[in-house]
Structure formats: structure tokens, C-alpha cells
Image 1: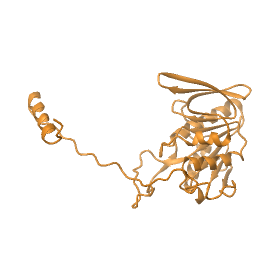
Image 2: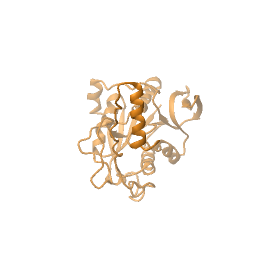
Image 3: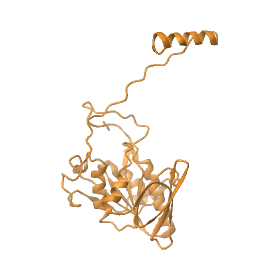
Image 4: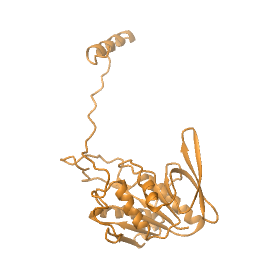
Length: 264
């Protein structure tokens, strides 16, 4: 059972995000990057499938040179090889342009199923997995919390959480599944795994290698254009209502609501 995992490198959740001076992009200066949290669930599930059914796990990542660090983390967890889509032409792409490039790369890889995180924690769009399935013309189920593969490897049964219960869906393979929290508990890379990751195959592909022109990918191939980035407005400081007794505090609160907030 060969599993292809699509992975993204994103800013650390604790990083202080700020826009560039012209507000046209995010300023990544000095920011630490990590593997997308939901993609960790996808990698872990792929490794469990390999351990149970054999085969191999291939990582597919579109991103700049620094994304190699996240790719090596996935390899250290136990993935067998990786493909890095690296080209300035990919930069600025939306979910559609990104999925198109991933689909072209997937056509060059032997896979029985594809796993992605349900969404990237930087843009929270949750679209790439679904669009990828459309490009590849295979079934897609999003936000799964359980995955079972038949013994013959021809179909899968997945669970996805819905309000008040679970959806249980059976689909033929190959298919695309996007992983949600609760699917598993991702492992930590071991020291031997980290050492082995340095020697595992990592192939780099450009837009030209995929047969894609600059009008099909990146900013030019996108259907969405970001107009500007800005921080949310600063919240006003809260006030502590003075008073020795509950009655005094209530009277002072009413005064603030009437004179300052002007809501009564």
C-alpha cells in the first residue's frame, strides 16, 4: 500500500505574525517554521498503514527552500522518500494553483491513496485536498478521524465528525483523505530516524518538470488575489468598576454604561 502525503511548512503557532510595510504580504523575517499540525496526522496515519500493510510513504511538499526542514522531519518520522516542488513560479499561489501543481506531481508517483491535513494553520482555507481530488478525478473525503482499509486494498471506510454524530463513508481506492485532529497521535522523530532522514531520497521538481507554464501556477494561475494584510485593531483596555459594596459597584457600572458606553 503506497501512500502519498501532501505536506506544507507553516509559521510556528507561537510566532508573532505581522504584515510587510506595504501590507501586500506577511513579513516572515525571524519567524520559526514547522510542519503543518494537521499534516502531522496525515504523516502518522500513512506510517501506520505502511507498518500494517507494507508499501512505502512518499512526502509531497510545495514550498521554498526552507521547506526542506519540514520535509526532513517527515522523513525522520519514517517516510521513505520525498518530492519537493521548488520554483519561484510557484510563489503566491492560492489553493487552486497549489492543488494543480500537486496533482501534476502526484501523476509522477505511484500511490494507492493520498493523505493531506484537513487545512493549513496559516491560511485556514481547507481547500487544497478537495481540489486535488478533483484534478486527479478520484474520490475525496475531508476531515476524517478514522481510516480503515480493506484487506485487498481496494476500498476504505472512513469516519468524519459531524454535529451530533459521525459520518461513516466507504469509498473505492485510490482516493484523497484529509486528516483531522483525533485521527491519531503523531509520533516524534527518533534520533536514529533523524540521522537516516539525511540520506533518504529527496527529489526536487520545477514547474518545467511538471509541464506547467507560469500562467497556470503561482500568483498568475490563482483564482484569488489578496488585496492586503492587516492586524486586527487593538482592543481598548478594560476597566475595573470601583465600589465598596455590590450596590455601589452596580451604580458605578450603570454610570459607565450611560456616560461612556452610551448604551443605556
